[in-house]
Amino acid sequence: MKKKQDIVKVDSRNRITIPKKMSNELDQIYKIYQKDGNIVLEPVQQVSEREQWMLDPKNTEILKRLKKSLEEKPTIKFSEFKKTLKIK
Image (cartoon, rainbow, N blue to C red; front, side, top):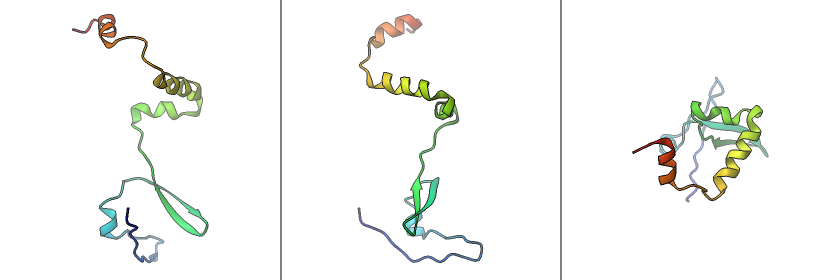
C-alpha cells in the first residue's frame, strides 16, 4: 500500500483536519496516542451493544470459554441441532 502523507496544522482549538483525499478511506472511530514523538491514530473496531457484555472484566472466564469453543470442532450436526430446537 502506498503511503499517503500531507502537511496539516493544529488550529487555535487544538484540532487537526484530515485532508479529504485521506478521510474518504478512513474508519469512524480511532484510538489516539503519542508514541516516540508521533501522534498515532489507530482504528478501533466497534462492538455492538448486544455483545459488549463479553468485554466486561467480570466476564473474562465466559469470554475465554467462548473463544475456546469457537476453536473446537463442532460436536453436533446442524440437522440434529434443528431437531432439538424443533425448527422445520
